[in-house]
Structures are given as C-alpha cells and as structure tokens.
Length: 126
Ligand SMILES: C=C(O[C@@H]1C=C(C(=O)O)C=C[C@H]1O)C(=O)O
Image (cartoon, rainbow, N blue to C red; front, top):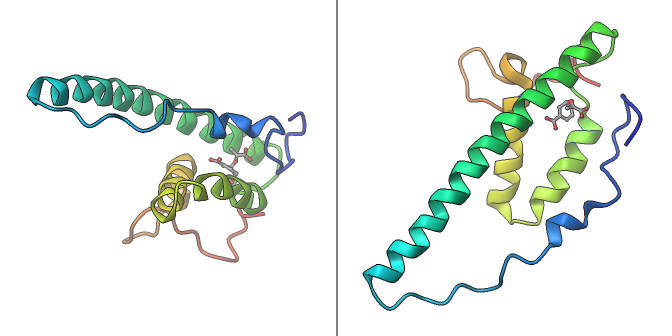
C-alpha cells in the first residue's frame, strides 16, 4: 500500500491462509509433550517479538499522522484489520482488538478502564 492515509489492507493478504502443517498428532508420552512444548515456546517468543514490532510500527504511523495534522486512529483500517483476525473466531477478534489497543498507546485506554476502548467524538479519531 502506498497511501499514508489509506485504509486498505495489502492485496496479497493470502498469507493468513498459508498452511500451518495441519493437525498435530497427539503425543503418546511425556517426551512427545515436551517436544510440542518446545515448539510452543519458539512460537510464543516469535509472537512477542512480532507484537513489539507491530506496536512500534503502529505508534510511528500514529505519531506521523498526528504531526501531519491527521487523526491518530483510522477506524476504517482498524475494521479491515479486525476482519482478518475474525478468521480465528471470537477470541481472534479479541486478540485483534488488543493489538490495536497496544498500537494506540495511552490514547486507546480509558482513564480507569481496560485497554482497547476509544471515546467516540475523540478528535484523534477518523
Ligand atoms: C497504524 C495505523 O494507524 C492506526 C493504528 C492501526 C493499527 O495498529 O493497526 C490501524 C489504524 C490506525 O488506527 C495505520 O493507519 O496503518
């Protein structure tokens, strides 16, 4: 995507549908469980790294748009992003909302409430 203010997702979004290796055979013993846990640990470490990177990218875009006089939050793009996460089921939508909240930083939090909610009518919202 080339536009700085556009709300579209990249068109080559097929990565979300790439094969993950299919069902995992159920391990027969503790050694098998331990092997699967090693892979889970690798995945979690990579997820944390990617989430940190995603948050930094989102913060930078938000700061840039603010400097340029635009909104920090673009709901149309956020809705498109949530659509991708919806493919993981209800918890996937929750996960997508948490990622968006992390990218918003303080703006995405109520003063005394949980992350992820933004007041409508906020001038930082498009
Ligand atoms: C990062 C952007 O800005 C904000 C943050 C988003 C995000 O974390 O994915 C999405 C839309 C915007 O509310 C963007 O427009 O791409």
